[in-house]
Image (cartoon, rainbow, N blue to C red; front, side, top):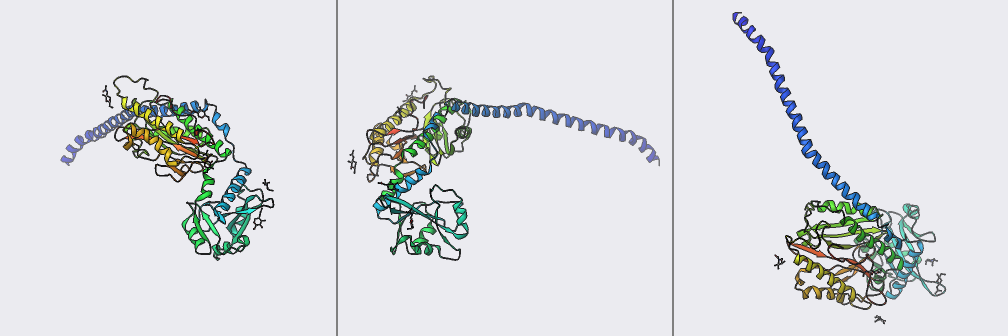
Length: 459
Ligand SMILES: *[C@@H]1O[C@H](CO)[C@@H](O)[C@H](O)[C@H]1NC(C)=O
Ligand SMILES: *[C@@H]1O[C@H](CO)[C@@H](O)[C@H](O)[C@H]1NC(C)=O
Ligand SMILES: *[C@@H]1O[C@H](CO)[C@@H](O)[C@H](O)[C@H]1NC(C)=O
Ligand SMILES: *[C@@H]1O[C@H](CO)[C@@H](O)[C@H](O)[C@H]1NC(C)=O
Ligand SMILES: *[C@@H]1O[C@H](CO)[C@@H](O)[C@H](O)[C@H]1NC(C)=O
């Protein structure tokens, strides 16, 4: 009891002060936490908002600069009308006759690729006046026939279909149709991307399958004037986007940020980017990249950009190497840019030599060798590690290929090639200039990518 009594007065005040002091420390804790959060917000929050603002400004600047061109380059392109597809199918039909092939079956998908074949079969047929035109049929599952008609494919007449039920052997269905006349084993040419099970299915059910080659392959290689108009628009537009974006670069921007802004810039003109390599300084010593894109831009970094976009189904593929606008020309002496400037010019000279060599009836190899000779002559032969270029059209990389072994391919008027020589000095820098050219009847090839680079400050 005494103990209780003595304890209770002692414990009573302590019972009152204890929660008070706990409250006090709780308040101190809350106030410090709020203070810390405030400091964090001021220091880092503002900074991240600043970074965000910088990138938004960069993007806006780039799109504004691009719009300032008036998108003039789009004027040479028109969405291909159905006559264009008729022309191209008829050109194909004439090539099939020359190659002695009964039909061409392209790798083509009306909808998502699936296990039920939906095949386009293009045959040559002779018109009453003697000219050769394409006659196209579709092998399609019966239940999809109406859906196939609704695809609005570029045909003047309703499409002609050969239908199969799902429990049938559909390759036999195709083989048994009357379109083959008396031929026992019709010869079908398929392109490189034809799905393997379809090639094998056709081959083991009465058809003779051959790969893409000869005149048929050449038909795709030689572009029509309409195709060239689209390719000029998309390639020029892609170079112009790089030029516009360059004006807005700032120190510290990352490779990934530049790629993202360039993509949005291209989209603002209705171009649809499908690859975008952005490399600063030593990153560019790997021709196709490989680093993680977080490198920050410094004044004396060469910027190598290789980018492609689509317009009406056709591809661009161009590259430029340049200095940021905030490096003065000539650069201050603390930056030793001697070798970089020499290599930049060397690669441009190599490109110019290849354009001069890109003439009717030249071999594909000779064009590569013209550029390679210049680079080897300057002692950088081992640093030019890839072929000079490739053809381009619907796909970014098409045959024929400009490599030093391709003596079999002779250049024809209307063939389109990239010329993209490069020099890569490992752990230091890389330079590549890539433009797109069309082989003409006379003289050297014509650029269709907005003109060549002029200097590291005027790409
Ligand atoms: C043959 O007829 C087709 C269609 O009737 C026509 O488009 C084509 O121009 C004609 N060809 C020639 C060489 O007259
Ligand atoms: C296409 O071929 C089929 C079958 O051989 C034939 O009936 C049809 O008249 C041809 N169409 C044209 C436009 O030549
Ligand atoms: C600059 O670098 C080159 C080699 O790239 C070298 O030959 C030259 O002496 C250097 N110049 C100066 C001023 O350091
Ligand atoms: C190019 O080659 C073709 C066939 O190989 C020939 O008919 C043509 O005359 C040649 N043209 C020139 C300009 O050499
Ligand atoms: C590129 O080709 C155009 C013609 O399409 C020509 O006017 C221009 O001078 C060429 N540019 C260069 C740098 O050769």
